[in-house]
Picture (cartoon, rainbow, N blue to C red):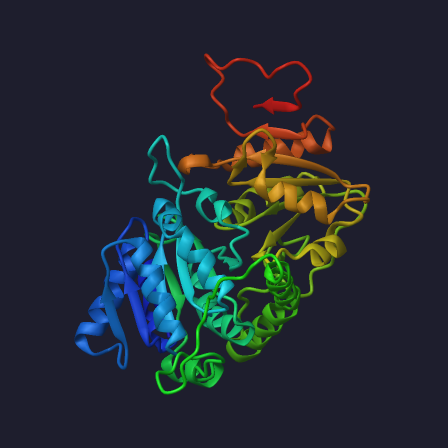
Length: 409
């Protein structure tokens, strides 16, 4: 049944239907509505067989999640921004111990200066912490991705972040269709942990590893990540078959004519421009680019659904013959360029594609449709730089140093 819901409420209700055994909660905007809704469900009995734990910090939230998962419970938590960084030591530990915790990250900028609005700098700061990172384009996908994330994480023994744009999605109201309890129960197997702490059979998880074995443990993590691309795609395909709608996968292909998401959309051709993006800006692009296509500009759209593991081969297959690849980046690697662009560049190394990094929407600055159309027009005209900052206010800002490639527009 379709209903009008705030994104956070949709996520909370979907997480509850995944039957977590432990929910750890510490409030930080913009994810607070998620854990608040789960607390109400726990108090009223809608969320059953679950221990809801209020903790004193984000570090404690992840620490309790680690303990719950190691003891054999399906564990869930949520955070954002500085909260994610505060728990970062434990975030690495959860991955290193192979604990399949699922965590919603309501993406929000990292200070200083203090900023509570959306960009992707928080999860990008922990992009190599050993967690899966699945990005939602809209609130329907944000809810659905949690069902997929529990399945993938538990099969691989890799924790998973479901990333949704803070405020832009968490506080937005949409017409959504949530998976019912019966549907989730049919789709998501009951949790059967592969490693459990048991007082009757004592063991240790997360022991110290010296130089003689540390490389091997990291190599085994690496191998699991190589397996993850196939597993993510398989669970996403299963979701489509079970529910009849798209969620997750490695890349989100958009039909080159309608710019609607389409499983059968062809890859790029040699004469086009492809815009690559991640998160809710995909919706803005769907609204902005049809005007260019109507004017004869051969522009296409590709969304990254799985940032970790990064779908390098899938991206290469889709873009290897594309003349201009314009990457809309919501996080900046200081002194280099957009974080997402660096990953795209490695995937397309050796191809003829010219890659343009457009850093946009930092700290929640609106990404305007006309600004997006402008960068595409200039890419077609050969006027778009390798690195640009969309809608940068240049008053009082010095020009780039001699030899720098940055271009501000």
